[in-house]
Length: 235
Image (cartoon, rainbow, N blue to C red; front, side, top):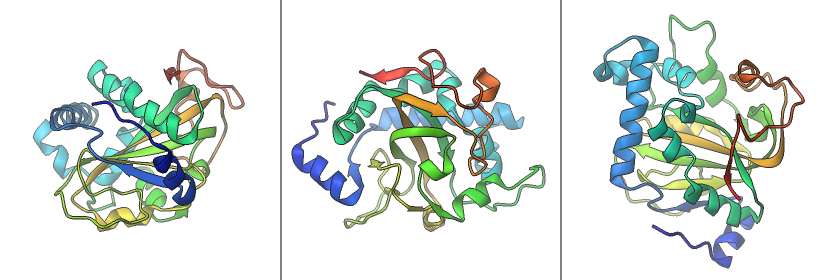
């Protein structure tokens, strides 16, 4: 489906620093992305796929980073030029490159006896902007997709957490987000996609629980993101 970003969409985004779009992912795409995520988590956690739903939020969060690198189906969905184009037209900037993606699982007991530190709990119990919790400088925008959950009637709210599976909220990286709000949506699963700019830079940020992930891929702090490791997704 072709999405047209009108001037009123840009005006709304500029005023409220976020905007929700309906039906960014269709039911088949939602089924595929959730299937691929569950299969990936099952391998990482050494459990059968059907037991992923019983895994801790901490375990899913820790192993749900940069899912686009896992396999081709996830890569196609997460690096969708269509999704990036909408963000680019909202902020009136291009090109967009992939910064990273991050899974936010359904709310579950946060304590994981096998975790060395509570990354997920620390992340969601503070109010911060996307820039403040990211090791990437010069973020273009964020997109939070609702991957699953019981669809409900919803009045207009100023929240990045949609309660309609398939919908997504684009938001300004400087917007202060109360991530603890996710606990109100215990039956929902979300995927955050962070879009970088042409000149985005990798920087140490201790508030990013995955701050060393890009170092393992060949970057050092202060490097500009390159097209090989963090490709351009929309020109």
